Length: 233
Image (tube, rainbow, N blue to C red; front, side):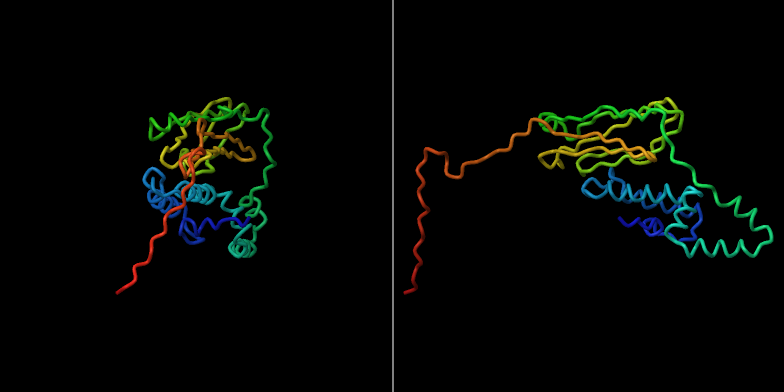
């Protein structure tokens, strides 16, 4: 899958400053936030794209790695300027951060509950049904991540989720009754670095209605009477 162009998503130039990126992110987020665009089923997806672009470009090291991977001409100009300086080796050692090895958790994060179930009766009695999700960081690292959902009728939080060593973070997800599409199966996905947690979401108690067009098996079928065409006199 092709990586999204973060500069195009934020509608900024490739040499935009950190302040410009922050201002543009806040301006665009106000226009696509799901709470302000409840009739737009793609609002969650638009907000997630903005979050990913801002997370990448607002961090200096992540932005440098992204530019080197997707905008080689920009990185080439920077390296060419360094090469003209007498102390270029010191500059490269200072500016180019070494790649960090993949972090291995001493214990995988704990995501609760294992499954979210919502009954049809709850959906009928409330326009939105909330469920609480908990993430426990069982490692000595700082867990950074974000939340996404697979269906537009399940709404999650907007923004980063940070969980310190041994700490627990909680957030709510909402099931929007009027947007539920049956058979009512979705999922909440939490992505934090190299770890991904998934909670299935399921609507229970749904019974599809089957209607007999002709009033039941005991009713004799009578074909509809055809109308005779009226001939003009």
